[in-house]
Image (cartoon, rainbow, N blue to C red; front, side, top):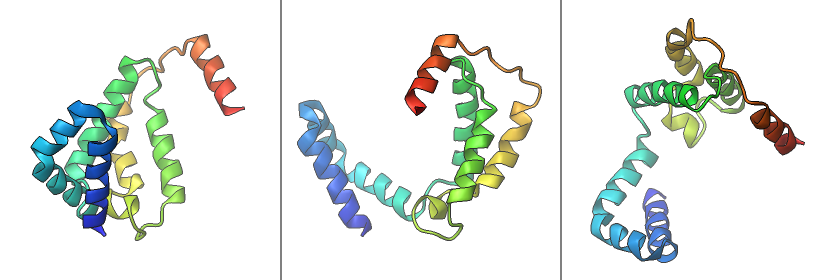
Length: 127
């Protein structure tokens, strides 16, 4: 199954991605196969996932979104994932562990001021 997904992803990028992407896929096909296989079979390490969550907090702050939304998103994810299920649940740390890991980084941070235009755009999108 992993091999089929790797081939599908590689060939899709080569076929539909334009000449630059086709050349990159050709040049780095072995690396792409290794990375895809590792991600599908092993998933991300706990350390990489924690680092990604910390970076997400920084990015959310820089672009003016409330980083405290991240634990809420992880909470919703926890409700929907089957702990020993296939895919994401199998290859990522438990959302509760991720929430516990980011709480110290969120402590004491002020809520960003959300521009009205962003709020209005969100409300229109979820209607």
